[in-house]
Length: 224
Length: 224
DNA sequence: TACCTATTCAATAAAATACTTGAATAGATA
DNA sequence: TATCTATTCAAGTATTTTATTGAATAGGTA
Image 1 (spheres, rainbow over the protein chains, first blue to last red):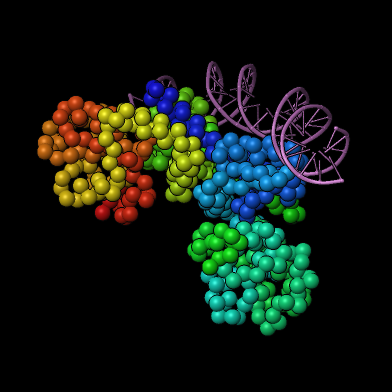
Image 2: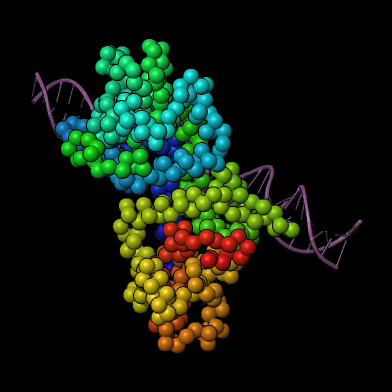
């Protein structure tokens, strides 16, 4: 193999990865898959894409080895092929926010609804929860919670928040989190709770590898 | 801003980064820029692209905020806009090599010339050099060495290796490194040295952030 | 067996991207 | 001032990527 041929081979492979990440639709799919395995249909629904289009994108992602699929009964489950894929997503997001300052501004505006949704850092939340002054709720779908969640978090999907109000402690702070800094579920939850008198906050991120240092039990996703 | 509008905004920005990284030409440009600032002409020469094409790619990279440019006299110098860009390159390469196992195989075949170029890990090299049993040579261009290099490394660009043979110690091992695991300069150097009786090795990587933990002096790139 | 569901495939049209060529610009130098 | 050099711009063509649609497949289920 000639030197140039070798270069083409190497750079061709490197860019397979970036190419797969370079479409907004695919990036969004990966973002959802970072929450846990999902079927094509569900991904299509969550991203508002057609099923065929979703399937095609997933195909592209599989060819780039960013996702893997498995079959259970009649459903094909897709999931991230490697933890480093999630890292790549994280790093790309962080870089984007750093290099395009208005991104961070817009995100803050949107997720805090112009100031009426207070944000809490992971570090502070950890302290509040540990000392018993606050409870942590995970407002994502149940299976996403099951796949992986923050220590001591309770699962209350956004849609079931109203019917679970009675289970929330009255005097304590309530800290909600969802898929991450760009996900609006937690903000919706906080607004809903504040309207009902709770001292609610949203977490500034979701359950990432760096926020979860504990081991994950393969059986039920419970963090020890 | 509507929820969907917000999503489009966010994912649109994220993918600006990946899109910029998704062309082999641009990836290669960034790879060279990770060694230090360079002019358009030089980049064009090193990548064997036309100057106009190189300039256009650099333009695209600047719009994605991956590179920044400055002007000195009649030359425009381009450089990475952020250290995280280098991290992104690293992570992408690592992921590609992990997910496409034949990549690693081909790389090993090429860079070790089928076994005649022994490789040494950074950790081992550090020990050998510290104990005085080996010398470390940086075979990249001088300005790349000046921009950043490994501790205790001596600069001997590949083209000047022959005329500097007399300065290499006879009884010691010689460890060569260049831009990284996919760069062939170090391999060329090792073959050249072995033909002349030296016990030469190539390092398995280049001067990355993780291999350099020391502070870099802004004046001359010397690592303390 | 026939039927149903989830997923993939194939074909198309529209849109974006890549590389080439030649001209334009803007600073230095003579 | 004229000239030279490095870089960018603009236009054109070829290629690649995208979303849509409707058909095909392949496992379950009745």
